[in-house]
Image 1 (cartoon, rainbow, N blue to C red):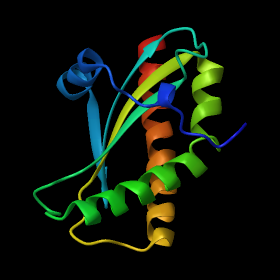
Image 2 (image 1 turned 135 degrees about the vertical axis):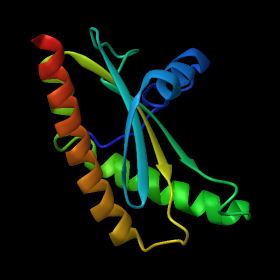
Image 3 (image 1 turned 180 degrees about the vertical axis):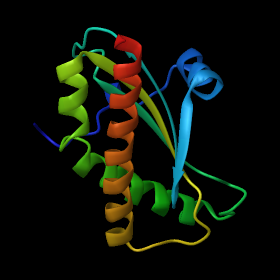
Length: 138
C-alpha cells in the first residue's frame, strides 16, 4: 500500500464535518485531540476507507508560519503511519472512518515526537473503532 494523502482522503464535505463534531466520539492523547465517527459502507476510489481533517488552533499559534509548520508535520506523520494498521482494519471490516486530528500542544515539537505520538494515537483509534464495531455487531 502506498503512503499517500490524496484529495479524496481529506474530509471536505460540510455536512460530514458537522456530523463528525456533533455526533462523533473523541479522546485526547497529548498532543492530539481526535474526533471520529464511522459508518458501514463500500469503499471505492471515490470513497476511501478513511477521510480526515488536520487542524491547529489559531488561538494558540497566532503566526500562520507556525500553524502551517505544525500542520505539515502532522500530515506527514499521519501519511506515513496510517497504512500500517488502521487502513487494513477498515478495509477488512468494510467500514468508513471520518476523522479530525486537532493539535492541542502549546509549543512546536520535533518531528520524532510527532511521529511517536501519531503512532500511539492511531493504535488507540484502531482499538476504539474495534470496540465500537464489536458493540454495533452485537
